[in-house]
Image (cartoon, rainbow, N blue to C red; front, side, top):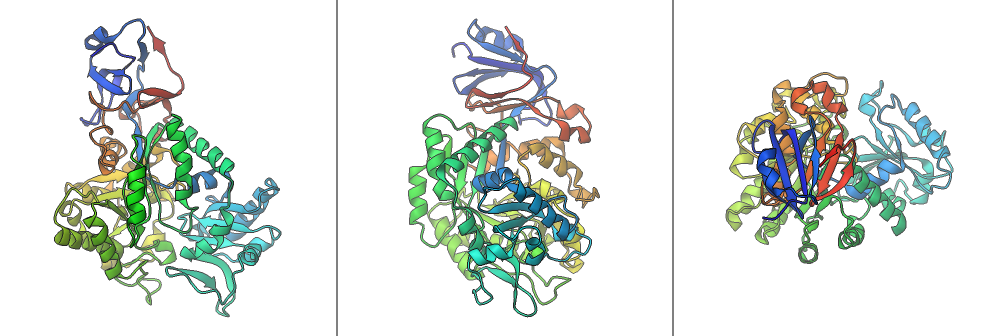
Length: 541
């Protein structure tokens, strides 16, 4: 076995194999965990070259694995955008953007993120003319809190040459008033009219943004992520694979990246990416596609009509038969498929598509995924387990807005289950957690807290019966994402033989109040057996 390069020990080690922490020491050689046991049992693996870390009362856990995010779009909006989450009105949001723009005189485009009309007093969507009062000389692109629709000013409309005669994209809408004039709102894929102009960022800047992303993930104990593609609202992620690959080749990746490009009719590009990206730290993972939008814009696809807009059930990106055909074709080629499905109609369509593909292509270990599952009909609860489909939740979304943003739109006759985490868990199906960064911050503590408390934006608990335990939340942020990425033999739990991806928290989450979870920070992050982040470390000999 040989002597250990590093030994980490402490009073509280959550391996992911139990429901609570144990006292233990972890021996690491090169990039693998070689043994876990008491410090006495590990002593024989320590010599003068071994670095020994006593984590005392901190909590040692597997490295966090964010199962759903958007790396480059998130990096751009985190670093270079006005934050509008706390704006209480359209006017306040516009003022904030104007003040932000004044601090960025050299930026060609002004970005913003986080405005939410459902949290404003009048609950009315904004208009370009309000933005024009505060910034009219440069184009502005402001994403709403869910990043599924955007607000632009008149300068942006002029620059992208948008007119009232510009056709709507296949899935999306250009906002117009009752006279047919442009409002400055772009829904779903219509955002692409602006984003294809706004995201022309130099390679040097993208490298800097990516390094900033890696700095943030290692500070937060995140050792793996799943980067999901497939929307025109984001910069073309395939352009950034070259950057990711260079970091990987130079040994600079401190977070593993599993990426899923867009599911398309022609699978040749996907097959090529799968061949070219299979390293231990940067790997093709599967294919991702949108089925619907979001509830607040009435673009989430429901089984029945919206309560406040009875002329629509929402819509799907493609006709149902096209979606099913896409799944059968990709499943036949053994690709994992991940569907964005928020409305109960979209979730049912995703499950139907997976079921039909299984019927045609045969049962296999596909590990298909449905993302978000924000609204579910009770009749579909057991189908996740029956079809071996992973439910991918982003618990922090529960706090993104008031629960009334959903309940005012979806009628009780649909028997809606909102973010039904425990309901699905209780069937024995697999659950995985992520952030959907940049929709919410990267910090896993926020998602863990929300999975336990179920609080909406006002602090009111929302369907408390769906809350889960701390141990479950940690496993869904570590072990299940590893399984969903086909990496459970290497990652996700602390066991001998697995890769040493480890995070150490400064508090034992199992002995503090729920509120203190949000105050917890990372003392150390280890990825691939190397310490990539240190804070408050006590080293002993």
